[in-house]
Image (tube, rainbow, N blue to C red; front, side, top):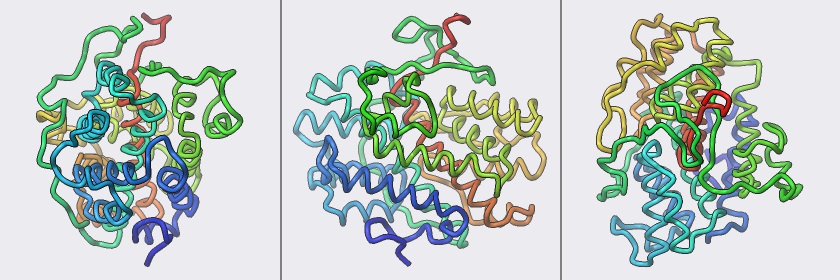
Length: 379
């Protein structure tokens, strides 16, 4: 069953739970690939196919190829054109190792003619496709199926073998957190956001449901306003609605995804919310304190520490959210069966998929466009 003429088949079993999530997912797809953008649609489909290949999603890889992906982006070799090569290398980086991205990675892009609008557009594309891949996987898991996989590109990323930058200061001199915390953090962008008095009505409307115009993060994302507007609506539909999975467990899933992706900022926000909703500070803290061994691409090689010392329900939720968050999602239908045995119904399972998948999106934006810092008053 196809739910739209413009997107892949699937997400069918997810639609009944929260139609607005699916409606806005389609709106985000249309905004990216059907509306005019700073880069041609054929290039965007080519980049999206690359993201799908890195993340193992055969359905999306085939879909974007069929939509006319640029032939220069179809194989494993990097393109010869300097700007296009830089774009592909950046897509590889923020898909595979977003936590290893640095401000230097951002600052070299303009040297090949890449604009701030194109940088934000690429981040949104990679982040959206990462979300969509996990929504499609979730649909398969809820139906008792394992998703079809595709091989990753046969090349290394520019970050392969790097260590994460844990130096004490941001590019602007603010103190960076070097460990996970439930304390409140701030976030500093690596490229300029539009000033408040420069925002168009469309840009203001794109994040009106989430923040005020003094939010530098949302002003930056408003460089691609239609995508941001759909994303803001999905965020509210997944996390604010009263029905489905208890709010604490949606926030727990977000914190787990952020831990797998190594996004200290998002983990601070959503671990704090999980604690507020559940009143289980120590259980939440154990999750964000867990030490995860990582490979040369900064992907965790073991997830076991995340669910240690949790009760059966939280342990199963954490294991599923963590598995769905790995670069090539490793969740299984048996994990869904375990959650059903623990009493989760379809609406709750939808929320677990959606809240986890959304943070494949949110983490990649935060990690690819800036870095966290302690409030200036705390420095």
